[in-house]
Length: 165
Image 1 (spheres, rainbow, N blue to C red):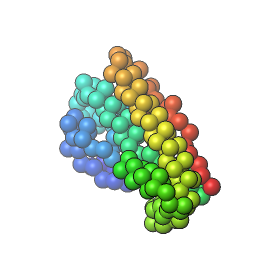
Image 2 (cartoon, rainbow, N blue to C red; image 1 turned 135 degrees about the vertical axis):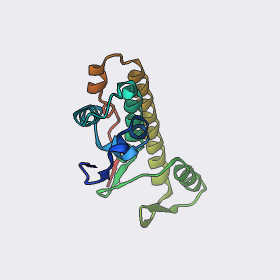
Image 3 (cartoon, rainbow, N blue to C red; image 1 turned 90 degrees about the vertical axis):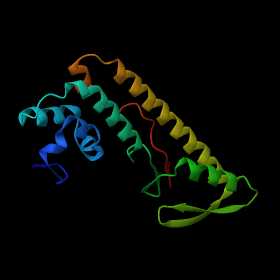
Image 4 (tube, rainbow, N blue to C red; image 1 turned 30 degrees about the vertical axis):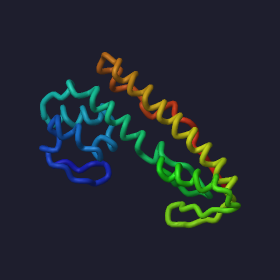
């Protein structure tokens, strides 16, 4: 039995090579080097053949997390997925002066022009994040040594979050 940093309990069977690759919470919680140390210190075998796949999956999970997919509005973190952004843009361009916008559990009435400009800014942010993740995937695929894999930082180079007050 293994208790993670977040106090989640794992059975050693969860550390089989294929299960590690499919365990998003474990991959999000531990770096590749930490996983390798856990694996080796508990004599679970060798999964070095999966290092690159694990790192690619970790980069994708990071991209899908609120570390990337969020903006700050009045001190709170929110995210609008592509479908929400598209709908908001359509409504904002419909000629209304004000529109209602759902932010988490709040429904706000905002000027349509403000929403339109914000959605353009958020779309640009989302696209920059998409490109950054693609670059990380490309770089990870090209890594050749264990040390390079251990040291690769897939959390770098993302654009600054949008902050609205």
